[in-house]
Image (cartoon, rainbow, N blue to C red; front, side, top):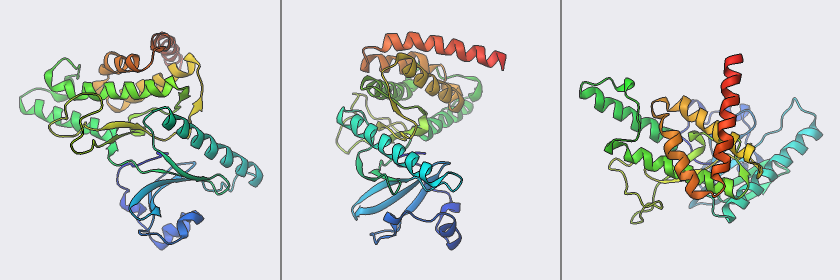
Length: 292
Protein backbone atom coordinates (compact mmCIF):
# COMPACT_ATOMS: atom_id res chain seq x y z
CA UNK A 1 0.00 0.00 0.00
CA UNK A 2 1.28 3.42 -0.85
CA UNK A 3 1.16 5.95 1.93
CA UNK A 4 1.06 9.08 -0.18
CA UNK A 5 0.13 10.40 -3.60
CA UNK A 6 0.17 7.92 -6.45
CA UNK A 7 -1.15 7.88 -10.00
CA UNK A 8 -4.71 9.00 -10.66
CA UNK A 9 -7.21 6.28 -9.76
CA UNK A 10 -8.62 4.21 -12.62
CA UNK A 11 -12.20 4.77 -13.66
CA UNK A 12 -13.22 1.55 -11.92
CA UNK A 13 -12.58 3.27 -8.58
CA UNK A 14 -14.94 6.17 -9.15
CA UNK A 15 -17.72 6.41 -6.61
CA UNK A 16 -20.87 4.44 -7.38
CA UNK A 17 -23.48 2.89 -5.09
CA UNK A 18 -21.99 -0.53 -5.76
CA UNK A 19 -18.50 0.70 -4.86
CA UNK A 20 -19.78 2.33 -1.69
CA UNK A 21 -21.33 -0.95 -0.65
CA UNK A 22 -18.22 -2.93 -1.53
CA UNK A 23 -15.79 -0.44 0.03
CA UNK A 24 -17.52 1.21 3.01
CA UNK A 25 -15.75 4.37 4.17
CA UNK A 26 -14.05 4.54 7.54
CA UNK A 27 -16.17 6.53 9.96
CA UNK A 28 -13.78 9.50 9.97
CA UNK A 29 -14.47 10.04 6.25
CA UNK A 30 -18.26 10.06 6.64
CA UNK A 31 -18.18 13.49 8.27
CA UNK A 32 -18.64 16.63 6.10
CA UNK A 33 -15.54 17.88 4.27
CA UNK A 34 -14.84 20.36 1.48
CA UNK A 35 -14.55 17.59 -1.11
CA UNK A 36 -15.64 13.94 -1.09
CA UNK A 37 -12.89 11.46 -0.22
CA UNK A 38 -11.31 9.69 -3.19
CA UNK A 39 -10.20 6.08 -3.10
CA UNK A 40 -6.72 6.11 -4.65
CA UNK A 41 -5.69 2.50 -4.38
CA UNK A 42 -6.47 -0.70 -2.52
CA UNK A 43 -4.25 -3.56 -1.43
CA UNK A 44 -4.74 -6.76 0.51
CA UNK A 45 -4.32 -5.05 3.89
CA UNK A 46 -5.32 -1.42 3.46
CA UNK A 47 -6.92 1.28 1.36
CA UNK A 48 -5.58 4.74 0.59
CA UNK A 49 -7.87 7.76 0.36
CA UNK A 50 -7.25 11.38 -0.54
CA UNK A 51 -9.26 13.69 1.70
CA UNK A 52 -9.58 17.30 2.86
CA UNK A 53 -11.14 16.28 6.16
CA UNK A 54 -8.66 18.15 8.37
CA UNK A 55 -8.58 21.47 6.50
CA UNK A 56 -10.27 22.43 3.20
CA UNK A 57 -7.02 23.83 1.83
CA UNK A 58 -4.79 20.92 2.84
CA UNK A 59 -5.27 17.52 1.18
CA UNK A 60 -4.11 14.56 3.19
CA UNK A 61 -3.64 10.84 2.66
CA UNK A 62 -5.66 8.52 4.88
CA UNK A 63 -4.52 4.91 5.11
CA UNK A 64 -7.30 2.69 6.40
CA UNK A 65 -7.00 -0.92 7.51
CA UNK A 66 -10.56 -2.30 7.38
CA UNK A 67 -11.63 -5.19 9.62
CA UNK A 68 -10.76 -8.63 8.22
CA UNK A 69 -13.81 -10.90 8.54
CA UNK A 70 -11.68 -14.06 8.24
CA UNK A 71 -9.74 -13.20 11.42
CA UNK A 72 -10.93 -13.56 14.98
CA UNK A 73 -12.20 -10.06 15.95
CA UNK A 74 -9.91 -9.76 18.97
CA UNK A 75 -6.83 -10.86 17.02
CA UNK A 76 -7.74 -8.58 14.12
CA UNK A 77 -8.13 -5.57 16.42
CA UNK A 78 -4.75 -6.26 18.06
CA UNK A 79 -2.96 -6.67 14.73
CA UNK A 80 -4.51 -3.50 13.30
CA UNK A 81 -3.65 -1.48 16.40
CA UNK A 82 -0.06 -2.76 16.37
CA UNK A 83 0.49 -2.05 12.66
CA UNK A 84 -1.01 1.44 12.74
CA UNK A 85 1.03 2.45 15.77
CA UNK A 86 4.23 0.87 14.41
CA UNK A 87 3.94 2.70 11.08
CA UNK A 88 3.11 6.01 12.78
CA UNK A 89 6.07 5.73 15.16
CA UNK A 90 8.46 4.94 12.31
CA UNK A 91 7.22 7.88 10.24
CA UNK A 92 7.52 10.25 13.20
CA UNK A 93 11.06 9.05 13.94
CA UNK A 94 12.09 9.42 10.29
CA UNK A 95 10.59 12.88 10.08
CA UNK A 96 12.30 13.98 13.30
CA UNK A 97 15.67 12.75 12.02
CA UNK A 98 15.38 14.45 8.64
CA UNK A 99 14.50 11.44 6.50
CA UNK A 100 12.27 12.47 3.56
CA UNK A 101 8.92 10.86 4.45
CA UNK A 102 5.32 12.14 4.75
CA UNK A 103 4.40 13.93 7.97
CA UNK A 104 1.89 12.25 10.30
CA UNK A 105 -1.20 14.38 10.94
CA UNK A 106 -3.38 12.08 13.04
CA UNK A 107 -3.99 8.45 13.89
CA UNK A 108 -6.70 6.33 15.45
CA UNK A 109 -5.34 2.84 16.02
CA UNK A 110 -8.66 1.59 17.36
CA UNK A 111 -10.50 2.68 14.22
CA UNK A 112 -7.64 1.46 12.03
CA UNK A 113 -6.56 4.63 10.22
CA UNK A 114 -3.50 6.83 9.84
CA UNK A 115 -3.67 10.30 8.29
CA UNK A 116 -0.55 11.69 6.63
CA UNK A 117 0.74 14.51 4.49
CA UNK A 118 -0.36 14.26 0.86
CA UNK A 119 2.71 14.09 -1.37
CA UNK A 120 2.13 15.67 -4.77
CA UNK A 121 3.89 14.51 -7.90
CA UNK A 122 4.31 11.06 -9.41
CA UNK A 123 6.06 7.88 -8.29
CA UNK A 124 9.71 7.67 -9.34
CA UNK A 125 8.75 4.56 -11.33
CA UNK A 126 6.54 6.63 -13.63
CA UNK A 127 9.18 9.29 -14.26
CA UNK A 128 11.96 6.78 -14.93
CA UNK A 129 9.86 4.67 -17.30
CA UNK A 130 8.70 7.74 -19.22
CA UNK A 131 12.30 8.96 -19.48
CA UNK A 132 13.45 5.55 -20.75
CA UNK A 133 10.60 5.47 -23.28
CA UNK A 134 11.55 8.89 -24.66
CA UNK A 135 15.19 7.82 -24.81
CA UNK A 136 14.18 4.71 -26.78
CA UNK A 137 12.09 6.74 -29.23
CA UNK A 138 14.95 9.18 -29.75
CA UNK A 139 17.40 6.37 -30.52
CA UNK A 140 14.98 4.67 -32.89
CA UNK A 141 14.53 7.96 -34.73
CA UNK A 142 18.31 7.97 -35.23
CA UNK A 143 18.21 4.47 -36.68
CA UNK A 144 19.32 2.58 -33.54
CA UNK A 145 17.58 -0.27 -31.76
CA UNK A 146 16.34 1.44 -28.62
CA UNK A 147 15.75 -1.78 -26.67
CA UNK A 148 19.22 -3.12 -27.40
CA UNK A 149 21.12 -0.14 -25.98
CA UNK A 150 21.46 -0.21 -22.19
CA UNK A 151 21.63 3.04 -20.25
CA UNK A 152 25.06 3.09 -18.62
CA UNK A 153 25.22 6.66 -17.34
CA UNK A 154 28.28 7.46 -19.44
CA UNK A 155 26.53 9.73 -21.93
CA UNK A 156 25.71 13.38 -21.40
CA UNK A 157 21.99 12.70 -21.85
CA UNK A 158 22.13 10.21 -18.97
CA UNK A 159 23.04 12.81 -16.36
CA UNK A 160 19.42 13.45 -15.32
CA UNK A 161 18.81 9.78 -14.51
CA UNK A 162 22.20 9.54 -12.78
CA UNK A 163 21.26 12.52 -10.58
CA UNK A 164 17.93 10.91 -9.68
CA UNK A 165 19.61 7.62 -8.76
CA UNK A 166 21.97 9.48 -6.45
CA UNK A 167 19.01 11.16 -4.76
CA UNK A 168 17.39 7.76 -4.27
CA UNK A 169 20.59 6.34 -2.78
CA UNK A 170 20.93 9.32 -0.48
CA UNK A 171 17.32 9.03 0.76
CA UNK A 172 17.73 5.31 1.49
CA UNK A 173 21.06 5.95 3.22
CA UNK A 174 19.52 8.57 5.50
CA UNK A 175 16.72 6.16 6.38
CA UNK A 176 19.15 3.35 7.24
CA UNK A 177 21.30 5.78 9.21
CA UNK A 178 18.47 6.36 11.72
CA UNK A 179 17.84 2.63 12.16
CA UNK A 180 14.82 2.11 9.91
CA UNK A 181 14.48 -0.72 7.37
CA UNK A 182 11.68 -0.19 4.85
CA UNK A 183 10.87 -3.78 3.89
CA UNK A 184 9.38 -2.97 0.48
CA UNK A 185 11.72 -0.60 -1.32
CA UNK A 186 10.67 -0.06 -4.93
CA UNK A 187 10.52 2.97 -7.22
CA UNK A 188 6.72 2.79 -6.79
CA UNK A 189 7.21 3.58 -3.09
CA UNK A 190 9.25 6.70 -3.81
CA UNK A 191 7.52 9.90 -4.84
CA UNK A 192 9.06 12.68 -6.90
CA UNK A 193 7.80 15.77 -5.08
CA UNK A 194 8.16 18.80 -7.39
CA UNK A 195 10.68 21.40 -6.33
CA UNK A 196 9.21 24.67 -5.15
CA UNK A 197 9.25 27.45 -7.71
CA UNK A 198 12.41 29.49 -7.36
CA UNK A 199 14.03 26.90 -5.12
CA UNK A 200 17.03 24.97 -6.44
CA UNK A 201 17.28 21.19 -6.25
CA UNK A 202 18.40 20.02 -2.82
CA UNK A 203 21.21 17.92 -4.31
CA UNK A 204 22.68 20.77 -6.33
CA UNK A 205 21.79 19.38 -9.75
CA UNK A 206 20.15 21.58 -12.33
CA UNK A 207 16.55 20.86 -13.19
CA UNK A 208 16.01 18.70 -16.26
CA UNK A 209 14.73 20.29 -19.45
CA UNK A 210 11.55 18.19 -19.52
CA UNK A 211 11.02 17.92 -15.75
CA UNK A 212 10.38 14.16 -15.84
CA UNK A 213 13.03 13.36 -13.25
CA UNK A 214 12.85 16.58 -11.25
CA UNK A 215 11.86 16.61 -7.61
CA UNK A 216 12.90 15.51 -4.15
CA UNK A 217 12.65 11.82 -3.33
CA UNK A 218 10.03 11.11 -0.65
CA UNK A 219 9.88 7.52 0.61
CA UNK A 220 6.34 6.26 1.27
CA UNK A 221 4.47 3.13 2.40
CA UNK A 222 6.07 2.00 5.66
CA UNK A 223 3.54 -0.75 6.29
CA UNK A 224 6.28 -3.41 6.28
CA UNK A 225 8.97 -1.24 7.88
CA UNK A 226 10.77 -2.03 11.13
CA UNK A 227 13.35 -0.51 13.41
CA UNK A 228 16.66 -2.30 12.93
CA UNK A 229 20.38 -1.53 12.97
CA UNK A 230 21.32 -4.94 11.54
CA UNK A 231 23.62 -4.70 8.52
CA UNK A 232 21.98 -7.88 7.21
CA UNK A 233 18.53 -6.25 7.32
CA UNK A 234 19.84 -3.14 5.58
CA UNK A 235 21.51 -5.27 2.90
CA UNK A 236 18.28 -7.18 2.28
CA UNK A 237 16.49 -3.83 1.97
CA UNK A 238 18.95 -2.80 -0.75
CA UNK A 239 18.66 -6.19 -2.45
CA UNK A 240 14.87 -5.85 -2.64
CA UNK A 241 15.31 -2.43 -4.26
CA UNK A 242 17.94 -3.77 -6.65
CA UNK A 243 15.73 -6.65 -7.83
CA UNK A 244 12.70 -4.39 -8.13
CA UNK A 245 14.71 -1.86 -10.14
CA UNK A 246 16.05 -4.56 -12.46
CA UNK A 247 12.53 -5.86 -13.03
CA UNK A 248 10.84 -2.50 -13.55
CA UNK A 249 13.63 -0.60 -15.32
CA UNK A 250 15.70 -3.41 -16.86
CA UNK A 251 17.32 -1.18 -19.47
CA UNK A 252 18.92 0.97 -16.75
CA UNK A 253 19.82 -1.93 -14.44
CA UNK A 254 23.54 -1.21 -14.81
CA UNK A 255 23.12 2.16 -13.13
CA UNK A 256 22.05 0.66 -9.83
CA UNK A 257 25.40 -0.49 -8.47
CA UNK A 258 27.58 2.37 -9.66
CA UNK A 259 25.28 5.32 -9.08
CA UNK A 260 22.75 4.46 -6.36
CA UNK A 261 25.45 3.01 -4.13
CA UNK A 262 27.52 6.21 -4.48
CA UNK A 263 24.63 8.28 -3.12
CA UNK A 264 24.11 5.69 -0.38
CA UNK A 265 27.78 5.92 0.66
CA UNK A 266 27.65 9.70 0.86
CA UNK A 267 24.65 9.64 3.21
CA UNK A 268 25.57 6.70 5.44
CA UNK A 269 29.00 6.17 7.02
CA UNK A 270 28.40 2.46 7.61
CA UNK A 271 27.62 1.94 3.93
CA UNK A 272 30.83 -0.04 3.15
CA UNK A 273 29.86 -2.71 5.71
CA UNK A 274 26.28 -2.90 4.41
CA UNK A 275 27.40 -3.08 0.77
CA UNK A 276 29.80 -5.90 1.61
CA UNK A 277 26.90 -7.73 3.25
CA UNK A 278 24.84 -6.99 0.12
CA UNK A 279 27.31 -9.08 -1.89
CA UNK A 280 26.58 -12.04 0.39
CA UNK A 281 22.83 -11.51 0.00
CA UNK A 282 23.24 -11.43 -3.78
CA UNK A 283 25.14 -14.72 -3.71
CA UNK A 284 22.37 -16.34 -1.68
CA UNK A 285 19.80 -14.97 -4.11
CA UNK A 286 21.65 -16.39 -7.13
CA UNK A 287 22.01 -19.76 -5.46
CA UNK A 288 18.31 -19.85 -4.63
CA UNK A 289 17.47 -18.96 -8.26
CA UNK A 290 19.64 -21.83 -9.58
CA UNK A 291 18.17 -24.36 -7.16
CA UNK A 292 14.62 -23.18 -7.81
